[in-house]
Structures are given as C-alpha cells and as structure tokens.
Image 1 (cartoon, helix red, strand yellow):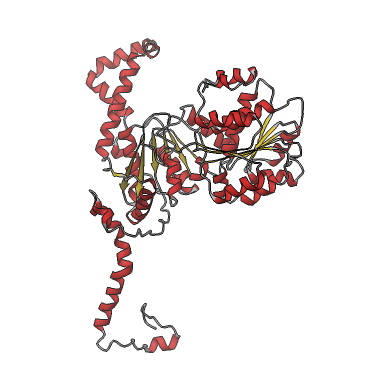
Image 2 (cartoon, helix red, strand yellow; image 1 turned 180 degrees about the vertical axis):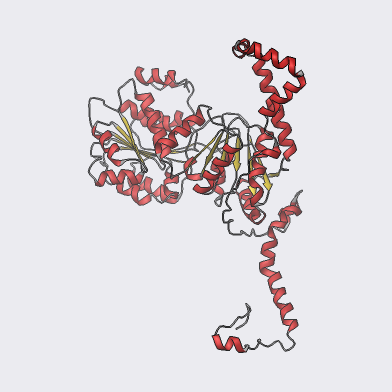
Length: 514
C-alpha cells in the first residue's frame, strides 16, 4: 500500500514524499488506518520495521497547532530512541508547524524545562526524566489525547514498569493509546488490559530471529588475543560500516581508543557520554564519516541504522536475546550481513545457548594472520591509488608539484618512488602500535545439558566439546584429586594440627574435611 492511499493531509504527504517514502511497511499499512480512526492499537513488530511512522503519521494528523497544550506523549526506553523519534516526528510535522520536544536523563533538566515552556504539541521522553518533570510540575499531561508506548518490552526489561504506570495514571482516561512491542510478555499484556480500551492487536509475523541474510560466525580466541584478531579480520574483510559490541562502558572506551590507534575511523557510544556527543557520533556514523561504531547493548537498542555490513561481538552477550538484537543491526533491506562473535574458551556454553535460541549453528572461522591482514591492506592501498589517478580533480593539482616531481624522478627510479608511496600508505604489521585492552571478568561458566550427547555429533563438535572441560573438572576431576590425597594418607584420618597451628588457632583444612 502506498502512503498517498492513507488520506493523509497535503502538508504531511509532501513531507513523506520529500523523505522518499512510497510503500508502507506491513506494520504501517495495518496500524495507520486503525489509529486514524481513533482506535487503541497494540502493534507487535520487530525493531527497524517503521514503527515511528506507524504511530507518528496518525498522531501528527490529529495535532491541532492552534492549541498550545501537549496533545501527545511518546514514552521510549532510551535517550537515543527518544531523540530519534523526536527528530522523525519534527521532520514530518514541520510543514504543519508541530512542535516536538524530547526529554531524557543525562542532559540538563533546566534546559528541557525551558524548552517545554516555549511550547510543545508532542513530547517524547524516557520514563525517569518524564516522572522528574511531572514531579517538578514542569510537564502537564492533562490535555494529552494520544499516548504512545514505544518498545514496551524493552522498557519492561530495563525495569521501567512502575514508572510507566505512574506516568499513565497522570494522563486523561479519555485518550487514544498505541502500544508497540517486539514481544508480548504477560506484563505488557496486563498494561494492555489495564490501560487500553478494546485494543486491536496488530501482529506482524517476525522474520527468523536471525535473518538468513546474516552469516553468523564465531572465533574461539583467548581474551588477550581478541583485539589483534578483530583488527586483522577487519583489515581482511574491509567492512563498509560495522558495529563492535562491548560488554561494559570501559570496554567501549578502550576499544575505541585502540581502533583509532590502528587507523580506523571509530567512535563509541555508551551511557556515560553526554547526549550531544552521542548524537554527533550517531550522525557521523549514519552519514558515513565513521567506519566503526563501538557500543554497549543498551546504547545501541532501538537504533535504526541502515547500511551496516558487519557486526563484531567483541564480548559474547550473557543474554541470548541481546545477541538477536545485536545481529539485527545488519542484514537489513534485503542486503547481506555478517556477524562474528569472539568466544573465550570458558564461554563456549553461552555459544550453545545462543544457538539453541536462534536454531542456527554458527560456523567456526579461522582467524586472519598478520600477513593476510598486511596483504589486504596493500590491495586496498593500490586500489585507492588507481582511483585517485583516475580522478580529474586530484590530477588537476599535480602540476603544482611538477618542478619538484621532476627533480625526484631524476634522482630516484619509479620503483623506489612507488615503494616510498606504499610505505607511507600501508601500515607495516611490525610497526603497529601496541594496544592493551584491560581484561574483563569472564562470564560465569554455563553448562548446557546434553551438550556432550547427540548435539555434538555435527562436524566440529569435538572441538567445541572442549568448552565443557571446566565443568568436568568441577564435577569429577576435583574429587579425583582428593582421592589421590587420601591415598597418600595411610590411615585416611584427618591430619593432626602442628604445634604452630595450635598456637595461632588457625587450621588449614582441605575441602571435604569436617
């Protein structure tokens, strides 16, 4: 269905066409007509399916710009998603003169209060900051006609349920409510029952948890070898746009610094960065001014970034659902993508848990060698030189250096000059700056029941069984160790205290002694 079939106003339709929107996505096609009629809707669809437009277009249509009060409230789980929704609503409502404000933690509340005082028709905000503003009487919701809950399951996961209920209780009962969620846990269903009037449930069949367009690989690697393994792989793969996921904020900062040292255009986002910086980074990434975005799971949730070709899981996620969200950043809009997960030997259990959720077995990948990375870099450098020589704008500058170039040509052979250019262009693997990434505490060992049975009969199964050695040690080998100790004691009795032990009152006992 095309957007010009939804009976949208000329102002909104002009903005939609300007943005290049033609065909509605399934969630938009089903939700927009219902929302335009004023019905409550529960929209179930995955991230990146166009939910902002699904609730945004009907909302913008209903806004009366002559009315100075807040008429619509959008609750979002993260500041990034709040800003993203605000920007999109502003863009489409610009011709109509709709004022859209976003409010979120991590930024000056005074500035946000000032912005609200200057007028707002739609407010988009995170639960915590919305409550703060309500308590300060800076946010009045008594004229709200449309309430939107975006990424409701994510807000539930982040522990915002009570905050959401507190906000909803301050919105007039006579309103339209639109709720969007990727999954539908019981707590979300209860919100629907409690706060919505006969809602229509629109469910868009989820694609495979992990799209067939994403090739999934894992590399078994020691913690201290991860960074070099990843950067070599990046040199070989030459991703157009990639996201690296780290488990902690510290990890993100260190990875970003290390990637920059190695010559990558990289920036990181996490919760401790000020909002201005986070938004600049995201814009640079979207506009192609960065090659690599380094992020924590929370910072990357809900972000609609197109064109990502590679996802690198520097740290394996503890939560399998996070893995699904991570790799969902690539393989979009019919384009193929690749995800590579770096797994420490003691984390193989988590890999198996992820595979059981996605119902897809990851392929083992051989790490790239330093020599392979070097050869790949040379290939890229040669292509760039050829491209530059074909560029008339670059060639037009050559004559400025004509006199000096001729002097060099007389002094050195063409081969020597070419060697010099390449040595300046390509980083020698022997001279790469050392990068130290602080060790993170490994995930607690996960034992997967049945991992040693039929599941491991696949090709490569024996290798991956090694991940269970630690568990076997826990269960059996340790006991065997103590049995040996017993054999050394002929009488199998407790060892007697030495005189020194008696003096201090401190007794060293073996585990198992009573």
